[in-house]
Length: 321
Image (cartoon, rainbow, N blue to C red; front, side, top):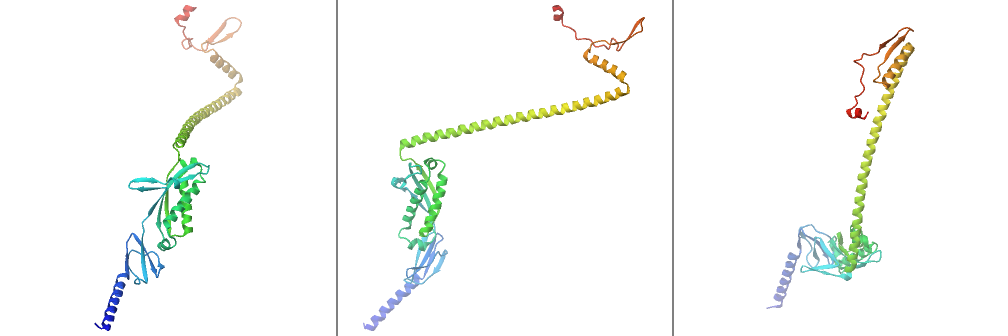
């Protein structure tokens, strides 16, 4: 075989390799759950690519790195292995704002927001996220009192940790965005201390319960008092209206009598005397008498049958007499 044929064969082999490389490396596909970054001679050119078939310059001019779009979970302070939980007490032990020691662990949900920065701005972005989570949680726990950390302040701690951790990720610029944080447990490191704090917590809950019951009783009594007050006020208003109407009637009656008196004073005076006596002595029989010096004559003002009788006495009262 001549040298020319050898060179020709080598050239054909190299040409076939180049054509094969171009054919195989000038296109790529991106799945729905993936995002890709294109690098030209190692330099990032493009960010996220849409799902589907895409074309690029062949290797080694351009390369493609594919990264998942899924949301990842970072477990701070513990790890699940084969269904068992392994705790890292050294990471979770921290000091509260009132100088008490607690154990706090957390779950951080995160995703890759910029593949280029995630790949090339740091050697280990997940380790940076873990350390930033530790710093954020320790910072917030360090400014929170133990009562709030163990009871009602967990929601506020989560909010503040999320804000601080998000700010740190933006500062580090490693292509990670935090979607949520979930404070798993905040507890005391010693069993005896936990029991003592539980007793204190139970006592406080009992105090809150008793306070609520007292407030409900106070509210009930206040409502009853307001109802009684309203009833008394309504009765007083009714009595006031009744007395006002009676006074108006008395005034009208007086004005009527006065008008009659102005027309016939003597007759009206006698009539008033007789009516008054009838009211004072309801069972007395009244006579109109005329004495001319000889024989006294009288005229009864009502008949015997119409004269009211006094109430009869009982047999017991007669026997007593």
